[in-house]
Each structure stands twice: as C-alpha cells, then as structure tokens.
Image (tube, rainbow, N blue to C red):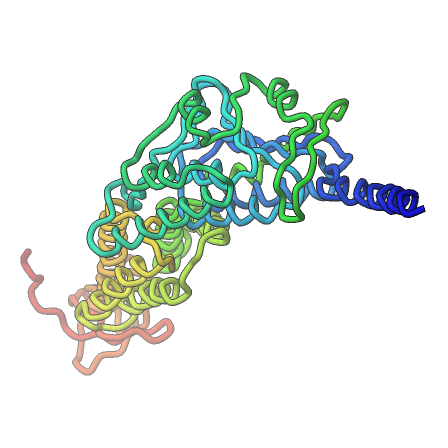
Length: 434
C-alpha cells in the first residue's frame, strides 16, 4: 500500500515538473527574423534608427533580431543609448559583425559585448576601443583618465554580464587590442563564426538566448526574413548628426541671415542662411544642445547687428566676438569631451565668422556715415547757377530758391537746404580743388 502511494506521488511530481521545466525556456516570438543593418558610425542618427528598428521588431513579435554591424565606432553617448536598448530588449537578439571585411571597433565593440549572442563573419574584427577626443587625438589629463576609467568599467561589466572574459574587454579599452573572428571565437568573445546570414540562423536554431524577460529558445526554421534599413530621414540625420557639421551649418546660417538684415535685398545670402539654419536645427535635435551656449551665440549676432546702428567704436563687436566664442565652446553639453565641437573646427570657423560679422558691420556703418547722393539730401552741397530772380539750375533741373544775399542771373550758388521744390542757396566760393 505504501509503495503504491509513493508511486502515485512520484507520478504527480513528475507531471508537475515537466511544465515547470518547459516554462523555464519559453519559445520566442512567432514572427519573422528581423535583420537590422547598422553600417554607419555610432551617432545620434544611427541610435534613433536602431531604436526604431527594435521597436518595429517587437511589434512584429520577431522570432529573432539580427543586428548586422559594420562600424568604425563613433560617439560614446550614442553607444551607451544603443547598449541600453540591446540590454532591455525582451526578444532573442544577436549582434553579427558582417559581411566579411566588416568591423566593430571603438564604440562598435561595446555593442558586441552587450549582445546576448554575438557572432562574426570570417575576415572581420572587433576591438580597438580606446577613447579619443572630438579631433581624433588622445584625451589629455584628468578628463582622459576619467573617460578611460568609465568606459573600462562599462566594458568589464558588460563582459561579466554576458559571460565573456572581462580582462580581454578591458584590454580593448586600455591597450586598443583588436581580435579577428578566429581569435574572438577561441577566446569566447563571440559565440560563433558564420560566413553568411543563412549559416548564422542555422547555427542559432534551438539555442537559448538571454533576454530582459528571461531566457528564450530560438526557433527560426521556416520563418520569413525582414530587412529593416534606414530611410531617407535616417540617412540625412545620420549625415548631419555630427557636432562639427551642426556647428558649421549654424554659423553659415547665422552669417547669411545677418548679411541679409544688414544689406536688405541681397536675397541669396538669406536663402543659403535659412537652409543652413534649418539643417543645423534638424541636426541639433538629435544632439545634447546647451541652451546657454545657443543663447550666447544669438546674443553675439544681436551685438554685431547693434554695431551697425549704435556708434560704440568697436565695443559691441568685441562683446559679440567674446559671446560667440563662449557660446561655441558651451554649445553641446556632455560630460565627455568626445561629444563636442573639435577645436580644429571651432577655432577657424569662429574666427572666420567674427571677421565676417565685423567686416559687414564696418561696411554698413561706413555706408550710413557716407553723404547721401540721392533725393533732397543729395542736393545739399551741390553747386548751381542762378537763371533768373526766382529760379536756379541745380544738377540739370530748375528749382525755386531763397537766399539771404542778393543774387544776379548767371551767378554760381551752393545749396544749403532743400524743402519741397524750393532750395536755399548761398553765393558759391571758388570750387574746391581735389
């Protein structure tokens, strides 16, 4: 009796354990295999593109998401956002460095480290993730040490999270070490090497992938392939979303608008300036812009424009130059110098714009001080000849005149004032010699 009872309890326990074991690794979505091609630098534009692609894949309940990477790296801030998206994704995901000849270096190496599953095509490589400044050189001093330490900690934590060698991840940052596909597989930095997408899917069939919702089993057999590629907006934003290019466009735009305001009717500078400003604002919509820096640049334009209207003997222009330089330095707010306008771009651009603004203000001011040669104001100082007791001929036209001194016909006079159709004249002295 006791033996029968024990057998019944064992059967019940096994019956309950089987569903529990199955529940530990539920299957992934029943949708298509979603392929996101990331063949670009790591920048705010490509970040938005990746975020949109993952959102679409989630809506389609993709059975697997393949992020096919070929990138030389890019901005650290954008890379962090991409890493967060990958880490928080609830469906099976693999980062695949492909096609042959592709690379995942610098910021791109972090995407491989963050991936639940990582793969590489033959003749590809990853690594060389030592941080550099906006101009391409090393980041000097304490800031350089801070950035290196920060990125090293991120790489090590990602490697530990995904079961990869943290020491090798650290060397990518501190020593700029790179690994080809064969080395990366041997050192377990990636999970497999696949020559193409078909081979990759075949190798991943039945594997379990970690997701933000827990482990899920990959089942892609018979599933359709969906390729998510950047549209025209993504390509435009990716091309423009560079601090250096955004800054240059902003300066060109402000210079064009300023020239049109100081010389109304030129038209062409206003068109170029307007287009450049629109593109600059579009680019800055994806960048961490400092409103204080933008306000200082706007103040600089106002001060340069005021120089035309107010006689300050160059003080307003000097204030505008200082404001423009400070605003340019502060334009992008970031805790890392890798997201800033390069000094190689900032210095010559700012100097050229200051020289342009100052030159236009000088020419406009000199034009205002120049004696008018048209209308009634243009008559003042002009010489004429008395025709009769009521008329004089000035600049080929007959005018009524008034004079404090008696004048005889044929006598030369000079105009001292003009009111309506009447001019006030005085007897003219001998002509000035030039």
